[in-house]
Length: 158
Image (cartoon, rainbow, N blue to C red; front, top):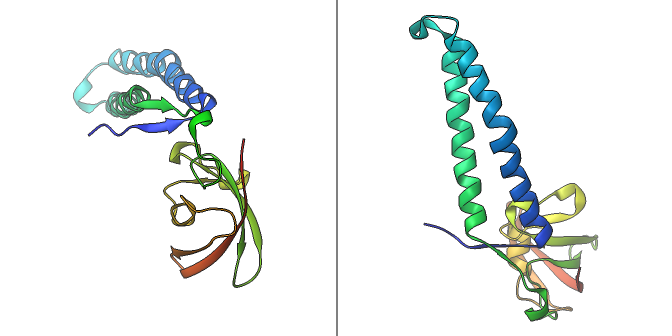
C-alpha cells in the first residue's frame, strides 16, 4: 500500500538527491564489480560475483523504495496549517512535569529525524502525544519508561 508522506521542499530535494546518487554513482559501481567478477571465470564458485549480485539486489530494492517514497511524497503547504496546534514541522518547547527539565524538539517525518539536531519523528511516542495539542496544555505520553507528563510551553513554525 502506498502511503502519502509530507515533506518540506528541502526534505524532498534531499530524497531526490539520494536517488540520483544511487542511480548514477552506486549502480554503475556495482555493475563494474559484477563485470570484473564475471571476467574471473567460473561463476559457480566465485564469491566476488555472488557478493556483487547480492549488493546489486540490495541497491535495486533501495532505489525502488526511494522512487515509491518520492512518488507518494507531498510538499507541506505551511500557509494552510493551524499554527496554534502542534503539527508536523512545529518546533515545540516542552517541560517535563516530573523533573522540570525543558526540551525543544521539531517534529519531522521519520526520514528527516535527527535527535542530535533536536528533530524527532512524528511517529515517536513523545511526538504522538504532542500532536494536535496547544500551548499551555499538559499531555501524558506513553513512553518506554512509563507514562510521562509534559507541558507545552511554546509552539513555533520555521
